[in-house]
Image 1 (cartoon, chains in turn brown, blue, green, orange):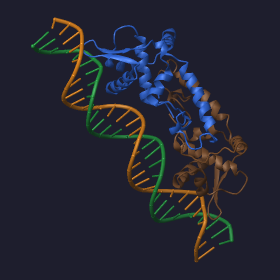
Image 2: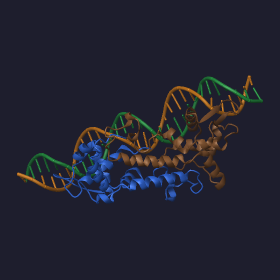
Image 3: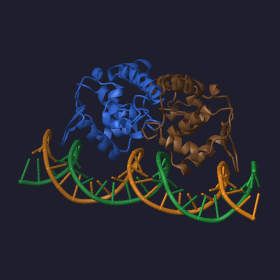
Length: 149
Length: 149
DNA sequence: AGCAATCTATACCATTTAGATAGACATTGT
DNA sequence: ACAATGTCTATCTAAATGGTATAGATTGCT
């Protein structure tokens, strides 16, 4: 039930890129060190995020990753949904017919999962990365240690 | 990030027992059939729930499982926390010093996980099993098919 | 006493997921 | 040319998930 390490890494990497939005690309190795993420694992994560069009990359000397979109338009929900999938508590609450169980409209527990899904989505959507960067500067807070799941 | 099959089973088994609260014990095999749960898997789950003092059991002929507590005093949160553990989004939001990451007080993301944890806990806590049983009777809703994660 | 219906305990196993590593390769700036 | 970077493919281990098998202990009934 916890958010996976991978997803935390993705969020922290996005955060790091958000801090540098509009400037030069960041190297994988830099982000990895800054956020304490295994380099090779981060490679895979960034490649995925790139497929989702959150990022662009540039190869070769002075290459690296850059945030493609304004950090203010990327929410924590966006990253979580992309990495963890869209459904938080039960797949059967999906809008998609194929994911639903046969009892969809009659299941006793479905409304509970739906209510929880909506509540959490709303919260995660309310945090965008521009905000988070601003927060950090204000509070001299840090996300430096990524091993806190 | 979804609730495990096991936890769903635990909830559905508790629900079934709540329906029969104050009456004779229910056999594992009956609950298993009623909620479409593999018998042997259910055995293990009920044994765990018994350790948590939610249930009592009686061996031998005409034996079975009985809810120990008034269903009105058992919430969905109780079952989920027992099966899935107390933390929903990140372990590091725990009150326990040992679970926390070194950055506890300074982590940029912690407040997000905390907010989500509180919201979800509140929702799951608001559903008790007496209520759910009553709901089902009212709506002729069903939880019959347990394979809807 | 004896038997059948139950729960109990222990061990096992297959599949998936999480988390991570290694090495060769392609691209770019200088 | 060459060094610095991202990209791709393959592998690996550990843990969790979901489930099965078998033998045993207890109880109620006759």
